[in-house]
Image 1 (cartoon, rainbow, N blue to C red):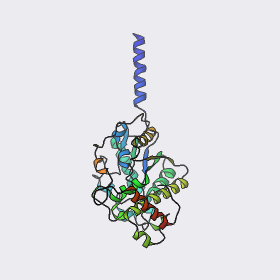
Image 2 (image 1 turned 45 degrees about the horizontal axis):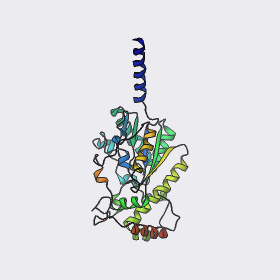
Image 3 (image 1 turned 45 degrees about the vertical axis):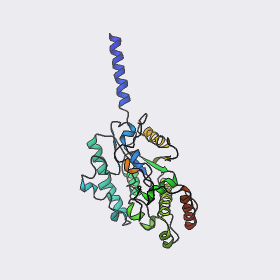
Image 4 (image 1 turned 135 degrees about the vertical axis):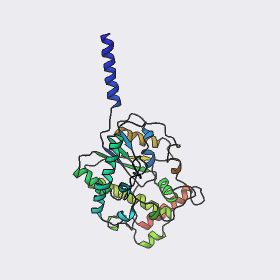
Length: 302
């Protein structure tokens, strides 16, 4: 009888230890152009809805998102971001962004928050600087990449039958060459070249600029913890492999079977042109070649 009791106690302890595993990180953020699986990799069901982990997507899809107007007021205000004022970026990080995340975690009784969204790009330098130098929070930055030309098509057309007209106006929270110009790394030789780019070529520029700024971010912040994931529609298992990489940092053993029926997934099938048909890959490659010649810089993988 005593042996049976001891066995049950040990079994209970083992169950508690297994189920109470938690991530070593307080925050896991994404860094990307968007349209690269940010929503999918912020989907809690993908990871089996582990306890103590709160999955949000760009502040607006969580339970404490756009219902709180005071917290939400700057989150998509590009007029604030485009003022080219890093002091205001830091104020936003300290007074709006981090307090929102902490409030969300407190209400959800979570110890880790995951948000792979690209809404943090404009204030990312201030966010990293603040977390590293003024807090004790542990965070991981996940560099998300999708095959370059797939990403360009997705950024260009957003959804079937809905082509982009003005990438910089319609795709907020992406880098553009004439926003905060002192921060631009891959400057177009002149504005006429940019104005003559197709929507797809502008998307290619956004991809390259994002990569260049990522390289600068990790070089400027050698103490920042980061990992990098890559996927492509040409490799059906690559998204699962990306999720498994993230799961490791969450101390989650496995992932669930991805489902396109999950909320916010169906509308994220980005492809097509203004007739709803997919552009031939040869045409995209030709546009990329012309774009790189016009920019007159070495190819930077996005």
